[in-house]
Image (tube, rainbow, N blue to C red):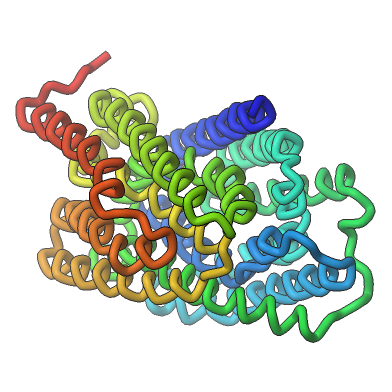
Length: 439
């Protein structure tokens, strides 16, 4: 128990540090770039989020899922991951020009091609990271990540202030982060983690079977998550997307804080308890309550201080960002629970259920978003995020949670619905009567 608490403290510290680095970087970007360039960065980030799924294809989760594995099987998974990284890099290069034409932004061609370098590194990095998580060396992993993020942040800021680079500075920062992380992991890794020139056809097939459902579900999930940004850039332009992305990034900070903790603590423990239904139920319900409560508290603080936070982070010329935050409230509160449901399916190897669920969730999200886009009103589109997240949080129970964990409906609702209602009412009253706290 003491070891778990130590890991949790380090993980939370690491995710807080990562969030701080990202917030500071956003603050610098908001002050050094225009709305159009911010919109271009948002487009690239959305494309990167989808490409990240292609690069891994669930191989990291598969390594953790396989509690006992031979060196040959381990090497097979590594080479599959490396191949996927190279293929993703090639796909980005091929898609760069068509995407630039689609958005009518010529500079996207070179910028998207530049991002492909990152995936050549990530192809070799993913399996080493999975090993650290599997044997619960998460404290060392967090220290490596904090160091690499700090160096990458300093480089990005230097490029933004002392060179004419803007979106390219962010991309080079991502590449630096991945490269330093890989070097550190190679230094601290165990010899048995390094791949050999062996390949198992049976392991390859089993890994692809496991990963294919996860790949499909996560691609759909990422399209669902990034659809608003990708479509907003097309229909309302990168300038509007630039403002919208600043608000959305601020709203999603609780998710960015909690997701690494969920994956690195919950995933290996779900895998260990996958044969005990009662233990899975207990862990799932306790985790749901803790995640929702933590997310609600964090977002409540952001909501109350929204105008002040936006003014401090982004500058007075971006105060319109604060207007969007209340409309995105429920996305910020409820979205973190999705990481928990994904972790439990990956740990149990039931990725086919996650795949089918994400199709349903994707259809719901795109349907609501399509209706909102017809208005061409950014406030309506921001509200669509919250409406779709509430709908998905109810639908996830019969289609996803009950088939896997077999938790009762009332226990499930009891762990998140009351908290969500209370926070929503508080933010509504604050927004309606303009009771924000200004410093």
